[in-house]
Image 1 (spheres, one colour):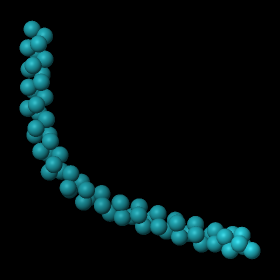
Image 2 (image 1 turned 90 degrees about the vertical axis):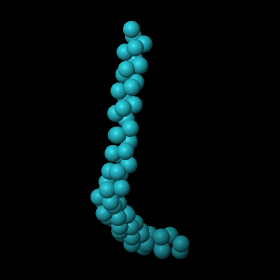
Image 3 (image 1 turned 180 degrees about the vertical axis):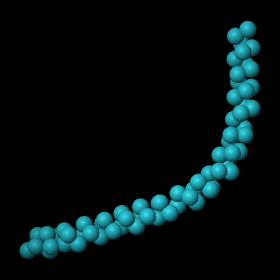
Amino acid sequence: MAHMVAFLLWLILFALSGPLALLALLVYPFLWLVLLPFRLAGFAGGGLLRLATALVTLPLRVFERR
């Protein structure tokens, strides 16, 4: 009896996972497009922080060489 229940649970799992996989394939490109501006903002913010760090540490690097 336990094998029958396990088999039925596997059938239910396979019946549900197929549509969920198709839904994930359809939703993923839209989710990627929605999150793209945040990635670009993070990239630009990281660049600005590196520029600010370089400008602040520039005098130290110049005087270190002397």
